[in-house]
Image (tube, rainbow, N blue to C red):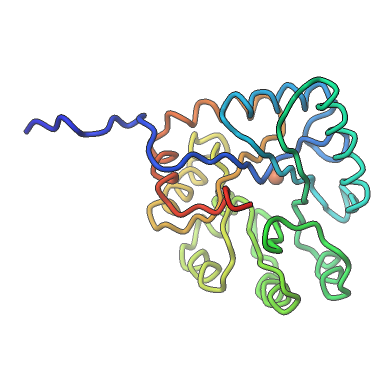
Length: 243
Ligand SMILES: [Fe+2]
């Protein structure tokens, strides 16, 4: 049968994402970029891809990257001055990617200020292999404190790859889910790619993020623009552009 109007796999659909909300572009704060030059190069590429705003999210991990809001916002100011001096006109803001451990739990319990995105979304990551024992309590605690939990790259956690019911449970508890677009290339693993695809099929994706750490990630980000699932994700009511 003729189907003159059938879209090609690579044809853009949906509303383009113009705000990226997960990356590591503040030099020296974590395992992301190591210099302002590298940051500028990557940011210029984001601009070329049509992004108008980047919310960069350095890791905060109590035993590795002890970043504080002051440190992050200070480095952000330096980066923005660097970019302005080079006529790079794009909005760059900062939040953080919090690692779930006892220290973070206490921080929230004690009402220490957190760096959040949009409507008090707290971007967090956790152990990749096994479910943290305090995960459900943490989700509840964030709610009590007026925050909204936003889980970074659910597709990358082994214990979620092996158990879709656990993913559904998080979704039902109101956890917002952010898929890394480069997961769709199979960059992390086949299992991560499959879970990312499944999440898109189910419509359980609230945000797409680059999780860009380096120029290598940026190259992958460009490739993903021809990916069928990337275009399928753009059909979802993503929250990126509300930030
Ligand atoms: Fe990240």
